[in-house]
Length: 366
Image (cartoon, rainbow, N blue to C red; front, top):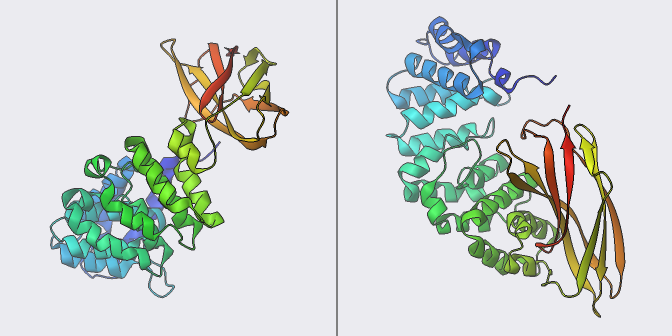
């Protein structure tokens, strides 16, 4: 069984944090910090543990933020030496977000310093929310930083809908202020950074689909393979939804003479096994056509209704009068992100975003 996520923050890590901080100040009460940070820790989940450690930092570091920031900065690894790294920095970034809002510029400097050792994408968001223009003026300069973690912070920290983090309503309403940051990082040499850019654009597409489709159109012409991959990943939500302009950006025109026949081999699926089906797709037209094939499984919910989940499948070019047969196995087994319920489910085949075939199957639970 996988280790519970909450155990990323544990008593031994707290003790190491205490040692790292105490090594950089003579006034740090290690025992009190450890006691406050680990109290009833076993009963707490990951973010609860992080908040408790943050609160212990608030209680034991100097009340003057500039003094506390200097200690935390000195406690980061210096020239390859040990120091605060990894998950220990999650509560540190939360400390900065809580205590440092009145020390705006100093806080951004500290978050930039710690992000090479653990992402500061959560800690930076309250500063963007408080004063977006001021924060983005600084963050925009990070797109040319030598450290790829800092460059990624510029894109990941400004994502309007960053998972696990506070949303940024102003950027959800108007994402234009972060487009220069994303544009500057489109051709970053690190895939780690480019993927963050794609995820930010995908966030924006959920609220402003036409804006992202237009953005991609402006940057996809003569794009390198890496940039094209980024823009395709950025368009994934739009492509799944059949957004016409997004499809056109990647050569997928409206369908003409494309037909699909679906054969579900396992009309009754025992939980833990796979749904087996075959698709026969035909181009009945006189010209070759590019097609993007996805499928949606409409899962049964607790209330008896159905909710679709779209899965990527394959893109191909169909020649005139050509038929391609495609078998598929889709595993239906226990996963942490879905609760399965027995009964009727539905499978749909989407081609360039349009539903061309569908069928039903039953899910049998043990």
